[in-house]
Image (cartoon, rainbow, N blue to C red):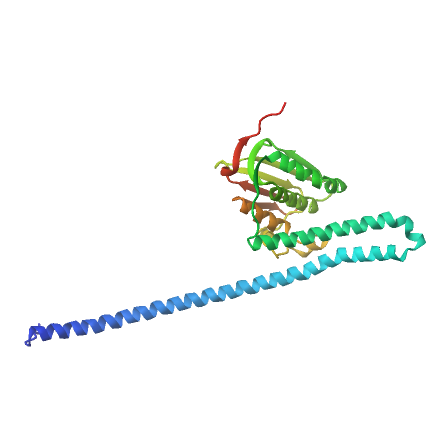
Length: 295
């Protein structure tokens, strides 16, 4: 049965609209409350995740600083210890002064490298690194880094081989920082490669026309679960790696940050016990042809 309202049409319409408005208000208030609750839950979850990330970062930095204290004390103890021996001016030790001086020099270089690494990372993270770009042949930069690392590689009987089919390719980069990238990667390769090992440097173009430099070593390799960690500042890999090899672990993170400043990227692939390959990709916009052949 249909109920017909027999009052004034205006009153009926007013009453109907009022009831409809109340229902709609209640419905949309409920939806708003539900949406607000969902937003609050999402915000709480995000805050909790951020807190966990912050705690993990603090823990990583604490571990890093503890390791750094050890890294700094080691060369400082050598510098102080051998300089004190010389200071005592013991007659029987004078013939060994050149050797002590060499120890002090090596410890000083190690200490300088550690401090430079920390300063580089601080500047990069603060966004205070600018690129002084120049066009240079990629082979020149790589060969310069190879010459620098050669004495250390020779002492470990590690063969460094450059197979640069595109050595004359011209790239627009900050020469100092790009050379540092290559040097950091070569230093890591030498550090984690056993005597009689080999490091191969190659280059080429990928399907997008980007320029790729690969540095492959025959070292101890990196466990798959640690590939991302070794690229993160303040992270350390397994103790047996860090204890047997000097260094702060900043070489790879700094190299990645510097190549990203050039608009490129760094990727790692590794086989535990067989070696590691680092690939540097420069975007094709940074390629400026080929250097003319010299007679």
